[in-house]
Structures are given as structure tokens and as C-alpha cells.
Length: 371
Ligand SMILES: *Cc1c(COP(=O)(O)O)cnc(C)c1O
Image 1 (cartoon, rainbow, N blue to C red):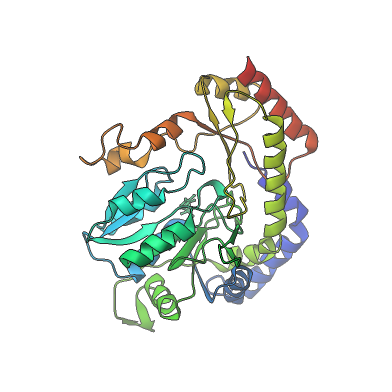
Image 2: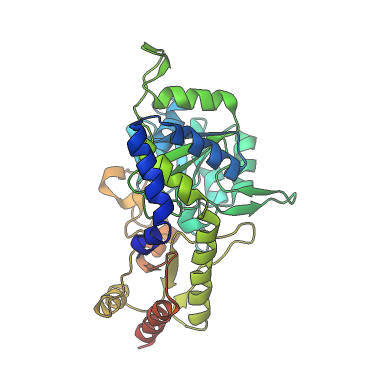
């Protein structure tokens, strides 16, 4: 699905030098590369504060801890997402309130959010799914009207640009109360292990996030609240400092792959190619089509026989997962989400394709779905 090896080889000299520098310094925790990366990412995103942490799941958890929610408080997110989003809500003894997504953009449906708000609702967590930004302006309007926080799960859309209705251009993850992301190796900005970050323009919140992510420590050995231990290690920060310089190039390459697929699949009656929302650039963390009237497992098996991997993100919606089962959510509760889980298929997309490889994948896929 991805080719991290070729990508590494293209930047090997720079990455190896950055790693060697950390090894020589032996400042493996909180070395200078960490602060440098936080500053570099803040400048790239156009935001005041970036606070790095150990992974994208921690970033979501730290955001909710720093915002001070109490057990029983409700947090609204989509049922069609990676489990991490709902997991941290449940872990903190908050109540995940799952809602529908838009069938075209795969992102949370603003009307469904509004319908799910109760006096206990504290936050909305939109997920910028597959590299496409949720309808963030509509979500911000709802949040402002009801006094709610917006925690943007930007793990899949680092680098996406949004054009606001007033014409301003901003980066995905920088509009809400706080944005979170992951540097898992296969993400658009990936390190060589685990990593994550939070970003915010709220200086007070940034301070709180730093305290929470460092054992709730306000000064050395003084703990005013319960926190966690969640750090981006220096080696990963050094690697990310190199890779951040290439993020826009990576997005362009991914979009080029998507354009190629879109063009190749034009006119296929049983394939719906990704719909691109007009307000943002899609950074194609995944290239996900919807299949109609074909047996998806059969398509996957036949692709596999030709040496082409494919994935189903995500096969089971959160509301039908055993861990998140609830009397509120029966099968049929979210028809759009359930239908997506039955019809989506993600094809290989990354930054390192040779034109022949891409043509082989597209031609093979076309043959399979047409026969
Ligand atoms: C990858 C991902 C996360 C979690 O990131 P980790 O770094 O693996 O903890 C959270 N939310 C979404 C939508 C993701 O895709």
C-alpha cells in the first residue's frame, strides 16, 4: 500500500545525518530537535503552538484531558473512523456519541452533529478522513452556537489547505479549539516509529497541554493534576525535521496518483471515485473508491493474485463494534456509514510510484471490475 523504502532512499543522506547527530548528542529525550520540530511545524501550519507527543491517540487523549472534561460528558464523533477517536473518549469515562458521515466526502455530517447535541455535550471531534477536511466551517458554526470545543483529528490530513468563505487560506487542523495528528510511518507526514502532536492558537490551553503530557508537572516534582507521560523522542523529531521539508511535495505526488486513478476509472459504472470537496485540497492519505454491484472480496482476491494489495478502511463501523456496543446503536442506526463499510476499497497510494507500476494497478483494477 505504501513504499517507505524508496522514499527513505531518496532522502537517506539527510536523514542519516540527522539521526547521527542525535546519536552523538545522546540527548534522546527532549533534545534540541524536538523544540526545533515543534517550531518548524508551527511555522508550516501557521499556528502559535505545537506540542509534540508520543502518538496520535495520545494527542487526542491529552486534548480531552487538558480541556478538563468530567465523566459522563458527551463527545460527538463519527461512527465511520479509526477506533482511536472513540477509544480515548471512552477511556476517559466520557460518553462517545457517534453520528453519521457524508456519503461523498466520508466526513462527519454537520446536520447529524446538531441533532446529537444535548446539555451534556462538550466537544465535537471531526476526523479529516482519508486526507480530506470535514465541513469545518459548518462545524465551527454549530460549535459556537452551542458553546462546544472542536478537536480536529487531523491524523490523516496533515498539510491539507482549506479556503475559508472569507477567502483566507489556512491549514487543516488549525481552525478548531485544538488539532491533533499522528506521525505513524504511513501517515502523510510519517516518522520512523511512533509520534504525534497537538496544535492550538490558545496559549493557556497550550500550557495546559504541556503540563498534562508531562505527568501533570508544573515544576520539577510538583504535580498539580494527574497527567500522562507522552513524548516525541529526539530521533523521531530529527527525522521529522527532514521530512517536513518534503511534505508539500509528497502531497503533490499523492494528488498526482489520485488524478491518474480518477482519469483511468472515468466511466466505470460500478466504481465511484473519491469526491473532492470544493473548500479544501485533498492530500489523499488514502485513495478510496466505492464499489457498486460487484463482490468486493472477490475484487480484492483477484487484485491480490496479480500482486496488488488493497485495504478496507473501515470494515466495521464503531457503533457495531463489540467494545462500543450500546442500546442506542442497533444495526441500521447509521445506514450511510454501514453502506460505506460494505462498499469502500482503498487502493495503493504513496509518493514513489513509477508510471508503469501505476498503469499496471489501474489497468488490472479496471479489468477486474469490468469482468
Ligand atoms: C492513525 C490515526 C490515529 C492514531 O494515530 P496513532 O499515532 O497510531 O496513535 C487517530 N485517528 C485517526 C483518524 C488516524 O488515522
